[in-house]
Image: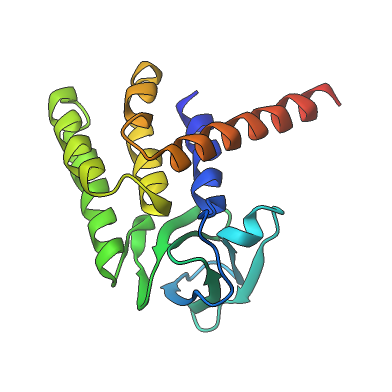
Length: 195
């Protein structure tokens, strides 16, 4: 169940679209990584993920660079290589480093997101410590793609019963988007199973 929840919410993080999108608010991102066993790296900027379309770049000499424009400020992106190694990161001005083990860094928001993920991983068996980490994180980041990404990270470790209280810490836009995305994905899963 948690694996399905993670996949559904990872999609939500990719597809999160700010209500304040404007053509003039373009945000170019670039992310570079290493893969020695893949020919292509596949990525989905959040606007394209709405149509479930992936772009790809060739891996040359074990290295790859993905870049694109995000409209509407900070957005979420996922990169996958070799069908198993994946990174989820927040776009903002600056180059993102895609490190081994799905780790991200290189920009302030991504460094902070990775630090949060590391702390949650380290504290996963201590529900009080995880709750304190969540309180601190969502007091600072309760809106936008970073809130969705933070929610995905914590849902990897928390029980389903905690999902509602955590979601309530997020802005109404994030809450609505996650609920709609999860419902849409469940509808897709049910439809696919009935065929």
